Structure formats: C-alpha cells, structure tokens
Length: 471
Image (cartoon, rainbow, N blue to C red; front, side, top):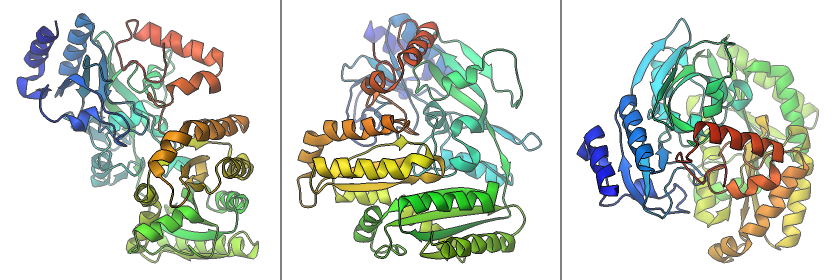
C-alpha cells in the first residue's frame, strides 16, 4: 500500500519532488530542534491542482498529511510524528505572486511565498504589506496564515487574520475552494476564510491568499525610551496612543536582563541605557505627512513622558541605519537567550491593563519556587503579547533545568495567565506542544464547537492529526 501510494505521488508531482531517502532533517525536525519525526515521504507540489491530487491520493490510502511552509514554527505543529506513516506536504515550491491590484489595495500570492518576498513585492508596487516578524526571511505566508502570526505591528494593522481578504484552500477531501475575491464586504453566510486562518493545517491546506495592502508612510521613525517599571511602560503606551493615534505602529517592551543578554553575547550592538533602567521600550511612529511632522510628534511625546516621570531617558533615531540598529537589538534577544543556554519559552497574552500585576505576581512565584531563576521578559506590549521566558539559574545545568523544571514552570505561568484572563498562546499557535493544555484553559463549550468543526471538515482526521485538538 505504501509503495503504491509513493508511486502515485510521483506520478502527480514528479519523482524528483517526492523525497523518501537521504537527509530529510529540514522537513522532519522542528525549528527549535525539540522534536524529530520520520516521514513516509516529503512531497513538494508545484500547483494547487497538484496539492489537490496529493490530498486525494493520501485520503484514498488513509494516510495523514502534515502541511508545512517554512518550518519555522515554535510549537511543533509542522513536523511529522515518529511513525514513518505521514506525508509531509511542503508548499515551498508554490512561490508565485499571482497579481497586485493597486486600485483595490490587494495582492494575491501563493502559500509558499516567503514573507519577506511578499513585503518586497508590495514595496515594489509602492505599497506596504505590514506583517513583520523575526523569521520573515524564511517563514511563508501560508504558514503565517495557518498560525495567525502576529509580529511587531499588530497594534496598528492586526494579526495575519486581519490582513487577509481571501483564501484558496484544498480541503481534506482534495477539493479546491476558491475564495480569493478581494472583497472587504461579503455577507453571504459563514466566513469560511476565518475557519482556516489559525487552524494550523488541521482543516485543510492553504494554497494561496489575497492580502490587504496599504499606502507607504511618508516617514517611519524609531525611538528608544528608558522606563522605571512595567506599570510606567503601560502609562507610556497610553500616552503614545493618545498623541500618535494610528501613527503608533510599534511598541515593544524589553526587560533589563533580556537586554543584558544581548549586550553580553552581541557586544557589537549598542544597547541603550541597559545598565541604567529596568525596562526599555522601542517605539515606531509611521506618519503619512512628513518626517518633520513625525519627529515633532515623537519629541513632544517623549518630552511629556519625561515631565510626567514616565520616562527617564530617550533617544530618537536620526536616520534609517540607527533605526535598524535599535530594532536589531530587540530582534537579537531570542538569539542571545539561546546562546545563554536552553530555556523555557512562553508566548502569552494578557489584557494590557493587567500586565504589570501579572508580571509582579508571576515573577515572585517563580523566584520563590526556583531560587536564582532568571526571567527574560520582552515582547509586544502594544497588543498585550509577552514572550515571558524562563532561564536557568546562572552557572546551572540548563539542560537539566529544562528537563526537570519545564512542567512546573509552565504550570505556574499558565495558571497565572488564566487567572489574569489571558491566553497561553498569543501568536505562535498550539501545535502539538500545547494541545494537551487546552482542556485545562479553554472552556468545554469552545472545545466542543472546535471538535464539531474538525469532524465536519475532516471526518477521517487525516489533516495534521495531534495538533490543536487531541482525540
């Protein structure tokens, strides 16, 4: 049966695009190297019609499918299990920009397009596609939509969900749904597009998308502010929203220890105020009038914040190179943390008003439970999303810390997130890493409705099993 299926797959996509031998690490191991599976085959279709034919073949053989984009996910949601019976369906060859409609402010791209390529195609047309995240040089737009990715500009433009007007999807039966019309209003029943966005490949395979575009701003300026506390960082956000309104396109918070790791492991980077302030805030102001207007707005905001005691020091980037350097510091935190040693990662969201109390309580619980534990707290404060990571005590065995303490640390953090009305997954998804946690933190009614949707669209359970929902 397996040999017959592989021959059928080769006849659909070509023998060179069905990989069964050699080093398949790029598809069988997750980005964080936490899990390594074994695929029956890695299949790389080159068109939507080929995707549909592959899905029909696998469905007929009773073989489950693991859709995969750039394989940059952080929750082990796009790699096969260890059974050697699953087909990895890689969309990496489907990279066409099908069209750009300037008048409608939309572009239609295939799912395998690298996010950075989507950004550059929009820029080449004089427009902006604002989704931006650290993995944009390797993640794909299909994966971004399947996980409802967030990034650094969510507070202005929204998650990937808000940036998508239409989808093309191959369902679990191998049928093609063409929902690519770039309409902003369409009240003709259930919004099927929203079912597939964020479903992590468990309901069908996204093969193309129609995306929202925006006019390029006349100027985008970056500032860095030193802030004495998380509570004052929230006050600065409130002040920035009042003064900059829709111009506020980035608001990132970074704890002193997180920044000290960047200074330690990337000494070539200049980390502003790292020794003088408990928190750093990175702000971006995008203006459609002029750079002078944007700079005046920024300077007025920061002066008011310093007069109010919210900010102790600040700097506004003088040019694009300086702005890139400031963003590089922020983006280097995960790399510096990895160089410091294995760690326990969290991608959480809490109502912004409750973040200071959450951090104070949870910090205290963790430091009491594990003396010497180090907290690497940073993230997208503008939309309430923190990467609240936990590092082993200094000079401790990081691998042993991860093995021995991960379950306890996760329980403390997730219970606190639930207490404060938050979510244990803000932008990374559920995958297999958090699927067993949902029954504790998601309401039974919500889970029942989710299972009903899964049963209706994928009754045989062949689409990315073991992800999001268990059983």
